[in-house]
Image (cartoon, rainbow, N blue to C red; front, side, top):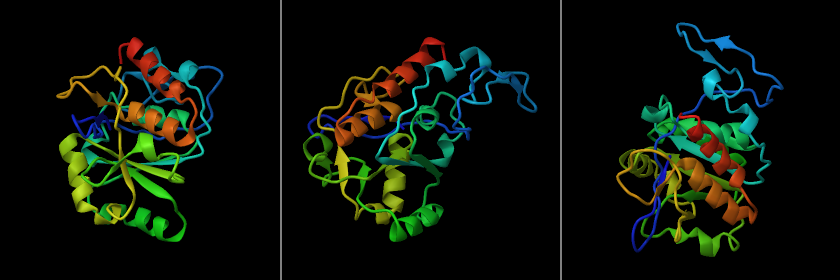
Length: 221
């Protein structure tokens, strides 16, 4: 999802992306694979067409903060997504597709039994600037909402269990290099927002994520 920084509050929203399952072992060589009912050949590792294979650009990142993406169902088949890139790079990332609280019932159960120190990256009147509070809060798990502004807002409204969690926005969002048609000039891709958030939480460089997004765009995809 892409993030949108709003004036004054400079808060963020997450925009469209799409996921595909993958094996987390990057092959040494490319293996041609023709998916059923398709004439296009895909890389079995990164799941992109062979002509835009990104395996050589993937930098595995052992993130200590667990990332959980709540993705709106309508975003699942978006071709030019960045959540897939997060899955290819990050060691700890889980994606849940849904909209209502019922759709995320299994995740809520997981929170009740094993997940602690969780925060949500979503802007609202009570959210706090992550730049100022990342070092204060011991965030072990970060939730981001993947969808257009309207879809992300709907997920937020339909899932009151999220409201009890600490929530954060960006006070000074970085410039975006994501190539897409955006209604707001200061929006970020989900990958860019995640990279910035994790850099604040873990106090280290996550530029490998941005470089992967740039590599995909340089290949025209």
